[in-house]
Image 1 (cartoon, rainbow, N blue to C red):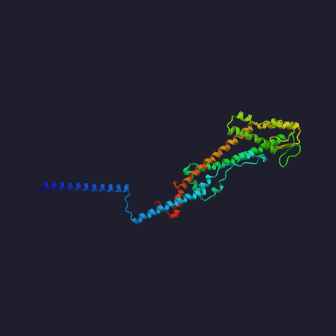
Image 2 (cartoon, helix red, strand yellow):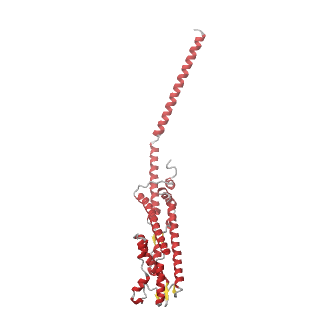
Image 3 (cartoon, rainbow, N blue to C red):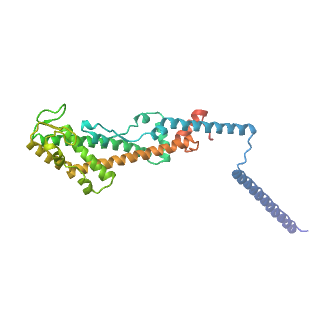
Length: 322
């Protein structure tokens, strides 16, 4: 065998060796990749019985800490908020402000807002019901603005009555009615009583505006029902005393114009519609809080936000969920 043949044989065997080597290396690499992928998806980890028990205990404590966190939020925030609704102030008819106090609203969440857990509860509320916080603070501002507008209207109305009637006869603004004068607080009462009936018919019973206006009683007609017009009471109120018949006629004409004044009635309609809107908004917010409160009571509430992890870590240490 010559040298050329020997070299050819050696070269062939070298090629076969490296080919086999590459095949074996590729196969081993593929097997390693398959094992890695398998372990990744199957989550194969060598965990000792001691470590497994420890992890289970940590998770148990984490769940307990979370439930306690929910209960604290429910006791201090969710349940109390679910019971707070916008309410009318009400009022005493005698003070001449019955309708205005019925239109005025009360909504106070300050004690709840001052709770240290309120920011945490707001995280939950905003997560479960987006914009809850914005809607709540908007309601607070709207109620304040609503009451302010009514205050301004009431002051303006009283000033208008004093200015109008003082030209005709003396007026009494407070205290007891003086002889020969008109008692402004009771005039306000008489007007607002009629407006209250109008709002009931137009808003609650949904009668057309014209029909609701027709049901507003005339002061002159009511006066003429009294015996010879000598009865000092009108709609059950003694708002004038020792006033001449001529002056009474002027007062009655003005009152009949005022009680059906379109501008004044539109104001009253706006107030009532706004009152009903705010009552509805308040009810919606309370119902959302009730939903969370009820789910916590039933043990089915599961929302987790930033404060929850902090509560867990504070209770059992950091890294619980690692």
